[in-house]
Amino acid sequence: MNMIIAPSVLSMDFSKMGQQLEELNASKAEAIHFDVMDGHFVPNLTFGPDLLRGFRKASDKFMDVHLMVTDPAKFAETFIRNGANQITFHAEAVTEEEGVKLVEEIHKNGAKAGVSIKPGTGLDALKPYLEIVDTVLVMTVEPGFGGQAFMEDMMGKVRALMIYRDQRDLQFRIEVDGGINGETVKIARESGADMFVAGSYIFKYPKGIAAGVESLL
Ligand code: DX5
Ligand code: ZN
Image 1: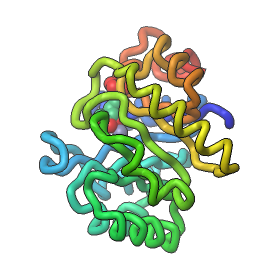
Image 2 (image 1 turned 30 degrees about the vertical axis):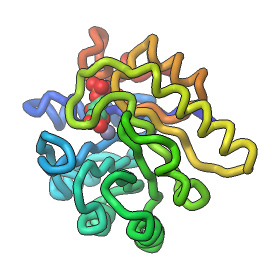
Image 3 (image 1 turned 90 degrees about the horizontal axis):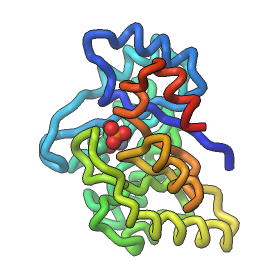
Image 4 (image 1 turned 90 degrees about the vertical axis):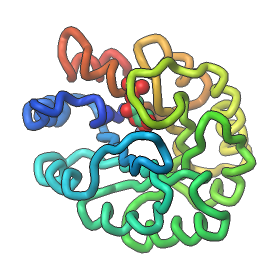
């Protein structure tokens, strides 16, 4: 699968969002990653559907919404209505029955569906979803904050997912999120990831955002 770079809104300079969104639009990033945190599922608060609607108005990029919330089913539809192309929820936040129902609901509302696991969660939690989701998001940091160090020991999960997918001829993307930079992107790519969220690396790249995206490809 081709590589998709998804810069994370969490690391934008919030005093220059319009300008930085223009730079993203002009870059080779195929997606924009939108981290939604509720202060319960993770110890941080970010933004909601209204900000996403603003982004949607100003960009044609694929909006990749990562719900780090305790009750993803409550919010999925609202985010889709406001411009999400993909909704990713956490396996830890739902029962198997709720999760499967949520994937169906996301698809019914016209978006792609992703499921994510935190570093401490094993692959078993993904089993109910691998045949039905479009993306599996393997967290490579503890969710909640940008700027943390990449956890290389998560690559075992990425490798196992790639093998599982290829053996069964499934189509889901394998996305990694957290600590991606010019070095770790290679490690994740070699392990089998094909979608890469990057926050601080891209927005602090000395030659600018578009060059930062390009340096990961
Ligand atoms: C962490 C978020 C990430 C974060 C990545 O909870 O899900 O998307 O913004 O940021 P960096 O690339 O700085 O680790
Ligand atoms: Zn994220």
